[in-house]
Length: 303
Image (cartoon, rainbow, N blue to C red; front, side, top):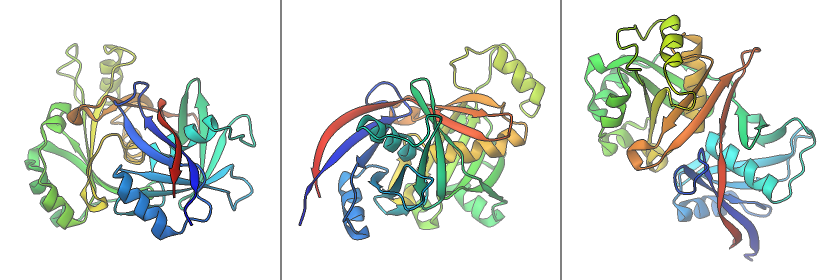
């Protein structure tokens, strides 16, 4: 029998409602089976819907199951931040004053407060070179020329993204992909391009020193990169703002010297959003992915 359950819809990676990526959060998922969860996720038609449950791991504060319209995910970034935000707003009490610990299929994910902002510790990412034939088919589906793709990597931190660094942020924003072809390929694709400072147009992108020079001429709150995420195999043509992708590409490109240890990513511009992802790698090498959250809907849902 259905019952009324506490519910919230949270916009993530923005402080302004309607400009980030919404997640639907069922704050009490007890008694729901996987079919019921999947059915509700299809009904919300959001990129992700989550269900908060009691944890089975004694180190965790709560457990989370994460569903897209097309299936369950072992981990996802904006649902992690949005669900934690909703859990805290509903009176959730973490075991530690220093961090919140979420249990999901990927394992334990640490979340910390950064003032009004929340940030999660990026899970380890596996890096694999994409097969050339797959890369060529994806580039064709994206309408990209070979010279526009600077580097490519298969990134796996639960979700698997074939990630392309393109020659500029403008190239990223101009993409008009063939979503049907991407769905047929069964491959989620992330793309990023670096914004170039007018003060340093001749500095090479591949230099760590150049990146620091360019950053010095930008506003502190200006985004350094533009990101887009195409997830047709999950039932989402384009995800507005994607924490898992930003987490894995940060680990890849900070280590490669392409990005600094602290920066802001912009995502959602092509969809009329203004997502801002705050990335920082600490002295231990841990990458933290943070963003603002704002509650848009609070109430009960019949499930």
